[in-house]
Amino acid sequence: MNDMPKITDICASDITRMAGLDTGPVPSYPYYSPEYFELERENLFKRAWLTIGRVEQLPEPGSFVTKNIEIWNAPIVVTRDSKDHIQAFYNVCAHRGNQVVLEAKGKAARFSCGYHGWTYRNDGGLLGIPDEANFFSVNKKTCGLRPIATAVWEGWIFINHQPEPEVSLETYLGGFGQAFTNMVWGNATKSILFEAHLNANWKVIADAFAETYHIPCIHPATIGSTFANRVNPFSRPISAEFWGPHRQVSTFGNPDYAPPTHARVEQMAYANIDTGNVLGAAQKGAMEAFLAHPAVNPSRSQHWAVDVTWAFPNFQIDLSPGGFWSHRFWPVSPNSTRWEAEFHIPDATTARERLQQELYVARIAEILLEDVTNTERTQRGIESGAFPFMQLQDGEVMIRHSLHHVDKWVKARTVAEALA
Ligand code: FES
Ligand SMILES: [Fe+2]
Image 1 (cartoon, rainbow, N blue to C red):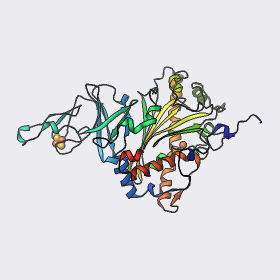
Image 2: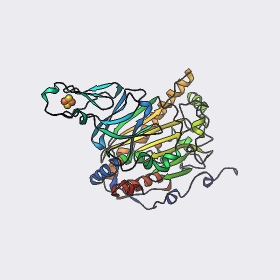
Image 3: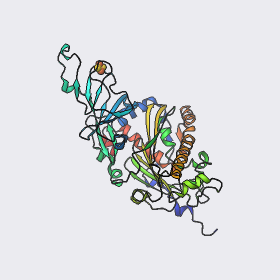
Image 4: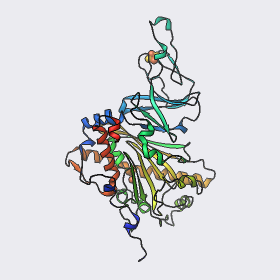
């Protein structure tokens, strides 16, 4: 066929050099060294802004959610108070350290510690101490829930371990934050959260979602034909952009993909989204504002499937014709990670839409399992020390970019130096 496009017309090449990165092998020890993990904890995760979710998860005054930030050794509670202010606190009682809020989420004007009954307002202030007269000189003003630096960007709630962060969230996100200003985060009010504890370094899990080179091998039956075709059999990316430590790679979608004729349910689902490249839970036409945003499919390619977008260090947002989803990779130890993946689903208005959504969720679960099946094996292989280096190709540029910036933060004396 003479009119077949060439891979060089569709895909980006030499992304790694374009990003200013080296092209040699990368070291393996950051994936298992306990010393390196402690440096990541102190110099990266305790200095960077980290996202813990969206404002829609705190829908009204009094709403709260609790989280465990393992890399900080800290249980936290995030509240929306009566003035609509969103704030994270250590979920720790000022009396003797018990965890104050035990529910995962809910709505409350005040919290009462289950140990001796100290009570707190949802803005963190200490309300009452049972038998206060028998204490000596407790200053109630300094015994509220201890606040954590909190900021919101485009509906995403970020926290910072530094009591007074060296840089604002705006400075931290820089050009990346600007590129996504006024994004339409459709269907953010409803989500399905997948969570797993995996015996692998957080970067091994993150790397599983940082390239499409694996797609023909790992996902042949699920999305192999949507992310690759005869022109681009190894799913090379179509474009990439980098903003300091943050990044976005647009992945290839096969525009000719159609579900096989026997797959009637899948055909119904595909008919409801415009491009046909990936399954989505959204309805045709409802995604216009989202898809028109310049940060979505920025090269306006006809061969676009998903923008894999990364707010450094551990937060991935994926933008697709059917909407967005996200991953957060929470380090627990050098070789264990808590992984969260969250997908958004609008209200179904017809039986057909409901069927489409059920298919979407089932298909996602299948794909995610394919993605993480390798990770614990990979960790054991890396930890064996058989190879002190890994080989990365151009399509794996996000892994290299991440390693480069993690290392920069680990070694930098200040956040300004890490971001420079
Ligand atoms: S530890 Fe909370 S009231 Fe005693
Ligand atoms: Fe995958």
